[in-house]
Image (cartoon, rainbow, N blue to C red):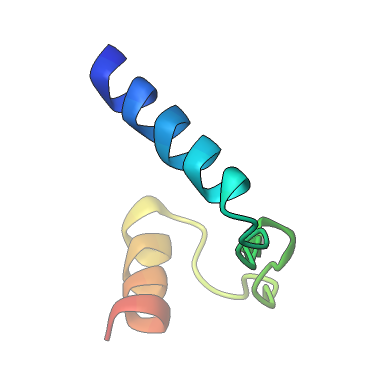
Length: 57
């Protein structure tokens, strides 16, 4: 773990010393998917089946 941190620090410093600009980092944490209100059976299996159909099929 220490070697990874050290390698990242060395690469970061080399990038700064060479004058390269900061890379464009896109932060997708602020973007949330549209969520629809659940309208279906309120038992465990029904909810699971609806979620599977909506997101995984």
